[in-house]
Amino acid sequence: MALDRLTLGTAPDSWGVWFPRDDHQVGWKQYLDEIGQAGYSWTELGPSGFMPQDPAQLRDELGSRGLKLAGGTIFAGLHRGADALDDAVAACAKEAALLTALGARHLVLLPEQYTDMHGGSLLASAEIEPDQWKALTTGYDRLGKVLLEEHGVDLVFHPHADTHVDTQQRVERFLQDTDPQYVNLCLDTGHISYCDGDNIAIVQRFPERIRYVHLKQVDPVIRARVAAEKLSLAEAVPLGVMCEPPYGIPEMPPLLDALAAIDTDLFTIVEQDLYPVEPHIPLPIGARTAGYFAGCGLGPTRRWPY
Image (cartoon, rainbow, N blue to C red; front, side):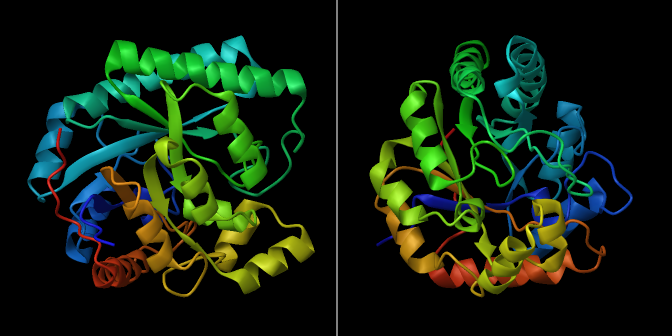
């Protein structure tokens, strides 16, 4: 199966960036310098505020390195109701303005974690009540409508471990309960596998909803330890639960073939969770990963048609 409609990129997460600013992270200049060295030409913005927020400056910084922008990411706790939706609309409007100024149109929305991203402590119940689920799904429909109609941006929802949309069952229920006109899926292959899901099954059951992809693998041995010790995601990541390919699951070649069979243009963004990480570690991992995907037939330099 030809992979020429899949465009390879990377994200600040692959360089250990989880927060706009943090002493354990590289800065945006090092990140941008190194992803080009590693072989990528497309990037995401990362956490809101990590990259320069002035469109002209960001355009110059990307352009001087031969880089282009694929999309951005925002966390939103829409299960909490109307106030959370208002907050998300405001945050997304700001992010959308930066995206569209640089020619990008994908905004990846992640549900709010119920564990702390720094230490892993429990912040809220892992279970979700029916009224909260209703607020979450209707909230994403409303947010997606605003993004598309007012900003020309596509909302792609990102399932995530330690959130209320984590397992394959919940992901499929979410897709059934949301409007495909306004809400589609960012398939994160690592988070689906982390939660014992089947990525290919999701692709084959909902091909029309797959509109963006994060490529990630999980070390099954470490994942088994995480489950046995009941560790949070923040505790699992430093153990190396998200690993570089081809050393984890899901197996990438059949997954890439399944994505190619959708026969639509897709960004496939490498996103290996590494936080916290020493600043010299991400570059060689990123370069090996870019080389691995090039060997699979996935290219980094395709011109995106918008």
